Image 1: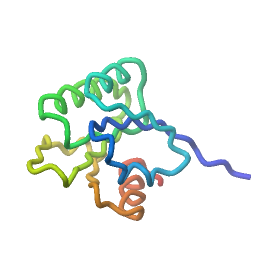
Image 2: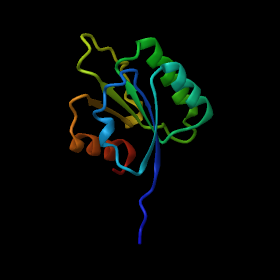
Image 3: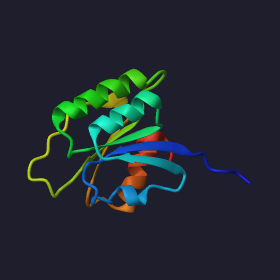
Image 4: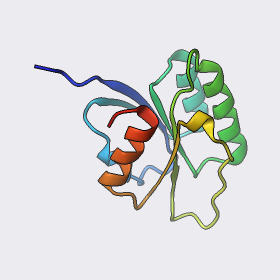
Length: 126
């Protein structure tokens, strides 16, 4: 019997009431969720997740600081990154990056199908 691989995902999301798209993550993902960029940076200093979700609720300076640490943590290849847009916010700012093709964009209205196809593209598997 083949077992599916497990992955670690770090979610940095200040909006505690935002559950979509995170609720759709497969059980093979072991999730650490923090509500501030400071806590996210602390976790990144201690570990290297397989995937990072960054919220549009973070200030641009916070996003850039996290991207810098994430880039430095990526030893042989970039750690895949998914930006999550919270449509309840009136203004949304995200840094422009191709992140080596390992970047995705989901939002607070994303479906399970959108999440799985994005995971497949950035991770190489669902």
